[in-house]
Length: 111
Image (cartoon, rainbow, N blue to C red; front, side, top):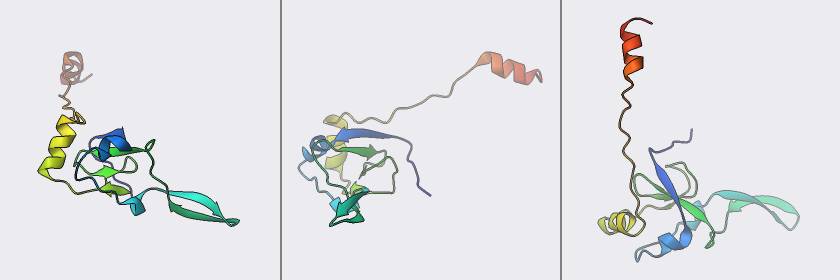
């Protein structure tokens, strides 16, 4: 079953390619169906400047929202994390728990 991370954000491919140590595992791109000499085949899709890829909360880059599938880049280093934070402005949001007094009061009263 596909696993989703806590957070991911989409960027166009040229944004990632701006990193000096960027490499692409193009064979891991999502498969797409194509007609080749009248036969339908599945092959990794072509990655172009218009392609959107997903930066995951573990700093890997995937071709889709799932954290462990279609991994395009996983050479996570301090330099890569710095690039993500400072150049891409990637920041994982912190969600504080909601405090709803009316709901807590009604629950305490057994309603």
